Amino acid sequence: MKKKVYLDNCTYNRPFDDQRQIRIYLEAQAKLHIQSLIADNKLILSSSYMSLYENNDNPHEERRLSIMDFLGHASIFVNYDKADIIEARALKIIEKHIKIKDAIHIACALEAGCDYFITTDDNLIKNYSNNEIIICSPIDFINIWEDQDE
Image (cartoon, rainbow, N blue to C red):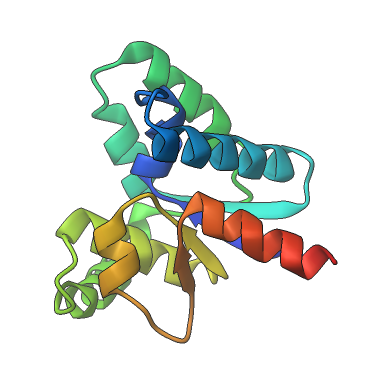
């Protein structure tokens, strides 16, 4: 069965960050590999109204358009009509010291039934966990993916 993934906004933007920093470079390469797995139909991409909201707020047109184009690969979309359910779930996530937008992203990923929430945000990785979804960096996801492939 194909795994469902949800990428947050910082992950989508990672290839546009300063690639001279080794961590950023490695995360960007891992994100691009995940993107190719999605394009090759090996993973199912989930997205949400929060992804669109944050992307539309991006002041860099090239980045915004590139990310919007890739969001077209999403097979699952959590729409705003589920905002009541999402926000109720997000309020519980906020209790674990997670920012509101991040909590909404996680709640959307949970609503979509995702297996993985991929982020470059250390605070999310460190402070949020549950038994419904794996929160990990792009690099960690690739390590998990390759271990399953063996």
